[in-house]
Every structure is written in structure tokens, then in C-alpha cells.
Image: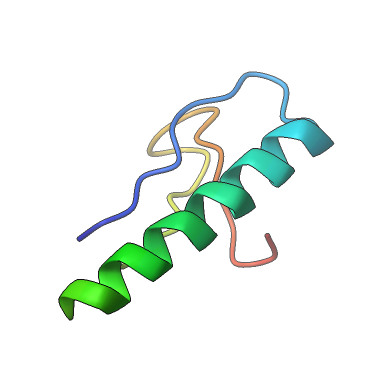
Length: 57
């Protein structure tokens, strides 16, 4: 399953915390069902303001 992060105009530390918490929640469910989750950064040119826009996050 491709785990999308959505669009955020001005990312904050609260966005970081929410995304991490959501990923941790999803990982437990995926693991229980044998599902692989995919996180794909999308560059700022293809999808402006996409939250997960680099591997650095």
C-alpha cells in the first residue's frame, strides 16, 4: 500500500509528529496482515507542497 502524506503549505514540527505517529500506527496494522507499505517522496515540482518531498525527512 502506498502511504501518501498529503499536501501541506507550511510544514511544521506538528506535521512531522503527526506523520510519524500515523506511520507507526499503520506499520503495526500492515505487519499484522502481512502487508507491505511504501513511502514515496514526491518532488516539489511534480506535486507542489507535497509533505514528503525528499528522502531527508
